[in-house]
Image (cartoon, rainbow over all chains, first blue to last red; front, side):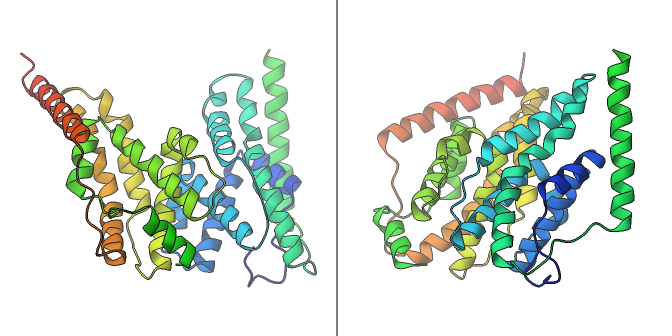
Length: 163
Length: 171
């Protein structure tokens, strides 16, 4: 993601983000958040703790989304994602849906909140480093994804067969 | 800071932007915390004009708990860019503020009163800003209280004392 990680592009495909998010039951969103704060900490020499900002993610997502927005704007990209709606949706889907069967499965769709931000970032990274390739999946990642998606399908089938 | 931003800060500041902590605390207590929302709104409006942001100060105040971090970070960035590095612990301040505003109102007995002290989370930010504004515009006087504000303060503080007595001596 950072400028100094030039071997691969900072682009993160939406399908990859979605699959990782579903397979990890949303934990990938926390990982992405942590990595993004680490990126800004190094890039802008910020005195922040990526760990605590990830631990308190619902309260710090706005700041992260605003930072991306400011970064893109500074580079001449006129982006307009509705930060408030994205965060409210993310909090809502992660808190209200988990209590009911089978609606709790909707919580797996929380990655949707990140799509407008990811799309804006992907356009930016593609234009900034067009020669760089997207990072391919490692063997471990493929195994993790396969296992996670398998568990998800089992849970999905179980929820509906119960009814 | 670019000249246009400096002009903006000054043009809108017939009075200094300094808000003494005691004033913020009293207004906050007297308004049962609503003043913090007003302060939040005014500051998002300030950044919207200064940095030409495409944000809604109203919605950012309506959803204050999730946007407070962004506001505190913006202040931190602004001060840093002007050579005033700050290191207030934003996660801790926000945690304290959210805790005081969500848990304390439901507590029984005197702990309930801690809700009135949620302004404490703003003090490190206010202090940093006050040092900044004092150095930036040392010639500008503090904004005096208006008659309306004094009446509001007196009524609010009176209500607070009634609640305080009622909580400490329920019989």
